[in-house]
Length: 592
Ligand code: SER
Image (cartoon, rainbow, N blue to C red; front, side, top):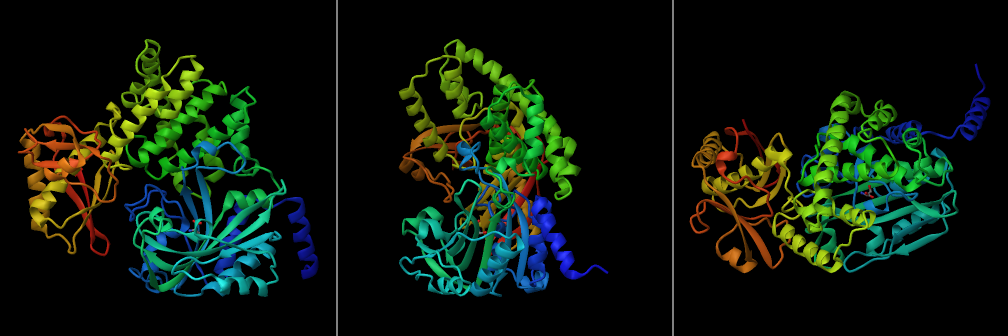
């Protein structure tokens, strides 16, 4: 028998010589919370199934939203009032920053969650124990909420930290230490954050502990502008989030996220392909490919809409950066395997989808190169650079870069004006849902489903009455998904009637046309809009029928759509109808 003290000495020695790697940290975290009564839950998909208001999962708490709002009961579902997970997340709002030491578009979030169970005291104590003992990091300082409006200052957290011997406690405002909501509404509340010192001597935020106490009826922007209403949640909850990559960087004593064991094999592989020393470009490729691999494994494919557009943008940026690194053309997909080697044991679906992921990456690179070639010819012939965006699907930032690279002049002012105009049209359309005007023949099916969605929207009004406001929409090349307000399950007769109407409109071979109108005019003609989106003063309206007056469907929308309903290939069929939230139903339908 080994003496226990000797055993611990050995463990400590080992930890010093071989710092913890990503696998061990994930494991330790989950085990730590399991030992404290939490149920270990798997990461949910990067594409949220039940939250039409966001394109990607951005936080660990998202899959648990219904437990905070009381729509679901954790005890009933997993016999515990607390859970822990390592959640795959995507956030692309800081995409331009990727390449420095800290920014990523994909990350894993370690989290522990309580739904009406423990609250501030335990949450803070657990975090303190895990940081100082579990991964042996000294805490530099913590933050607490200073109070605003109806939300009081968080004196309780301050006291708890003091009782643990933490002396540097800083008060901050709503921008920094009040979390949420994600999307258009949801749970939110004050937070306390833990900061630790990294190798560069900087204090970085390691852990965010949210006290979910409120339900916000609007998005975060409105909350910060005092334009939202907070109501107390019946069940208070805890939602914590700690970025694995950032924690690892600190624990492993590295300066950059890209030096941790999660990235080093990818960077090494990139260096095999490249003879360039450009660190930023290598990091961008490593980051974007990793994100793309995870997205494709979760069912996203490159397209011009929604999550598919974000994926396309990541892959196209990777191609551009790979070019600056002198990669052989069409070799990006070779990095897929390296990413999967690192992550496959933790995320099985990467291994299962390996071939598909490689194919998608390769296909998108080829497609982009084709477009690039055609677009560049136009560009060099003096075409309006903006055409590259509207007709060739070039990411806007690439157009500027290309112009610089090729020594071509772009009229900055005109570009800015066109951009603004385009944004208006995009906003006029379903904003974040459909980027207006991007042509892409490869996405025929998505475009067909988009038009079918308009027909379905009108058919729902015809069959169920005018209270069926749109709550969300999501389209892939395999199906359409549409969320709308309605309080009951649809009957078989209702579903059948809806299908019949849509199929009849397809048979009628109606033209699909567009017109730009002042917003007030568009409202006057009764065009349907999606209240989740913001619209500019000029809006584009798609109508299905011979004339605007006699059209079957009219909607504020940025397109793209098929030219005629006869282009919808197949028979429209509802494959699923279910509730997603109270008073919100979801239809999934296909054209078969
Ligand atoms: N939801 C919080 C965050 O994303 C804590 O998990 O930071």
